Image 1 (tube, helix red, strand yellow):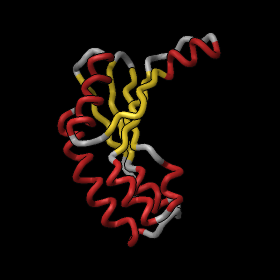
Image 2 (cartoon, rainbow, N blue to C red):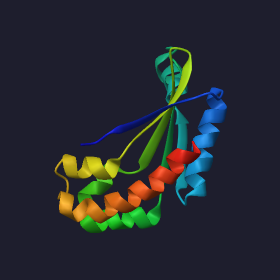
Image 3 (cartoon, rainbow, N blue to C red):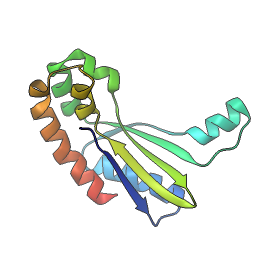
Length: 130
């Protein structure tokens, strides 16, 4: 089963985004993109919405392990974290794409076990720093 990690932070929104970026970088994840989806909605659709920002990260060695198990896992890349507002609170969330890959049938659970184990260790360290 794929769980969604979810954590309420007592930080201001922009500080929470920075905390996620720093936690990822400190554990060897390269930051690929940080994008405020609420700004995209405003610019492209002319609508206001609660703040919602993606932080997309990649640890090349973990990505390689996953692709060695199945090229289809790449369709779920990169690892993503979201920071959003909900009822006046700042929330961070993350879902394991490595677990999702096997649940979606992109690769066998057996092939993904070492990837899930290693990714879990790294994400746990990131999560503890958020």
